[in-house]
Length: 476
Image: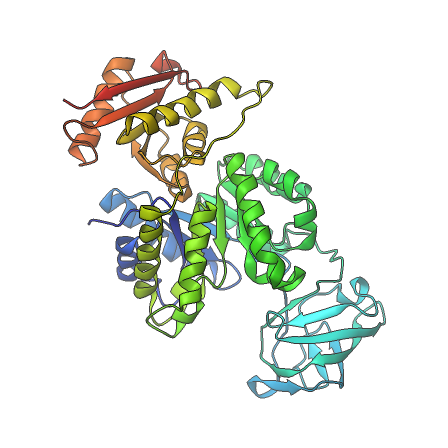
C-alpha cells in the first residue's frame, strides 16, 4: 500500500466517520501520520477497538502510524436542555447551577462544581465557542451563579463554557483524566495531550505519573489558556511537544491575538527541537462540503510556512461527511507550499554550556553539509530519539531517515516533521552499519545511483551514545 508523504505531518481525529479498519486504512493511504483519540467523547472499549485496528494495520503494512490520546481536562460544559435547544435573550437574567437538572431559558445546569467559588461579579461566561455571552451579577459561593445575558441565542446541550476572566481552580488532570491516562498507558499510546495546561507543574505532574508507570509516552502541552501564554517558556522547556489549540485559546484571549501567538509559539518550539501542532478549524467547512474555503487553504499554507511539525483535523475526520477528501485537500496544499515556499534550512545559535552542545553541533553541521552538497538523504541512528528531533528542527531539504532498534520510538517519531523511521538492530561496525542502511534505502526506493547521502551516528556504533560522527557518501 503506497502512501503520500509530506514533511509537515497530519493528525486525524477518529470518530464515527473514520473508526473502521477500512476507513482508517483509506485515511493512512491519503496521508495521515497520526490518529487522535478524543477522550472528551467515546468509551474505553470504543477507543480500544481503534487502537487495535491501527496497530494491526501497522503490523500488516509495516507502517509507523502513531496514536495521540487527547485528555478532556477540566472542560466545562452545559448539561442537557429542554427540547434539545432553548433560547436566551439579551438583557434577561440567567442562573447557573451545578446539578443534573434539565436546562431552561431561566436556569442552566453545568459540569463544573467550583464555578460559584471561582467567578466574581463582572466575569464573562462564554458559551459555545463564544457565540453566546453572559456576565456574572452575583454568586452565592456554593452552587448558584446569577448572570445577565449580553449576547443571546440558542443554547444546545453539551456545549462548552469558557471563563476568560476567571482563575479556574480545578486541576489540569481531573479524576476522569487520570482514569483515561492509565487506560492510555496500559495500551502504550505514543503521545498524550494534556488539556488546559496553565503552568509548568501541570507537565511535571503528568510526566511523574508516566514515569511511575515505567512508560515512555511523550507529552503534548495544549496551549489554550491565558496562564499558559504567561508561562510559555517554562512549559515548552518541560514538555515533549506543544499544541496550539486555537479553539479555546481564541475564546479565552480573543481570536485576534491567536495568529501572532501561533507564530511565536512555533518559533520557540522549533528553536528547542520541540514538535508543534496547529489545531482547530483547519478545514471546518469540509465537515459538510467537499472542498475547503480559500481562507482555510491559506490558513494551512501559513501554518506550513510558519514551521509547524503537524496539522490536526478534528470534526472534519471524526464526524464530517468528507474525511477522505479533507485529507486529500490538505495534502495537496502542504505539497504545494513545500515545493515552492522557503520552508527549509533553519539556523540556530548553540550555547556551549549546554550538555548537548557537541551533539547539536554535529547535527547542525551535517544538515549544512547536506544543503551544500544537495544530498538526497540524511540518515540517523538513534536510541532515545534525540538526534532525530534535532535533525528535524533544522528543516533540511534532504529526506530524513531514522533507524533505531526501539520499535515504540518508530511510531513516536511519526508525529515529527520530515521523519521516516526504520527498525534496525544489527550493529556490528560503523562501516557495515552504514552499508546496511544504504542498502535498505536503495531497496525501498529512497536512494539510487549517483545520490549523495549523509550518515549521522555515534562511534563506536555498539556504544549507542550521542552523535559524534558525520560521513558523506555517494551511491555507486
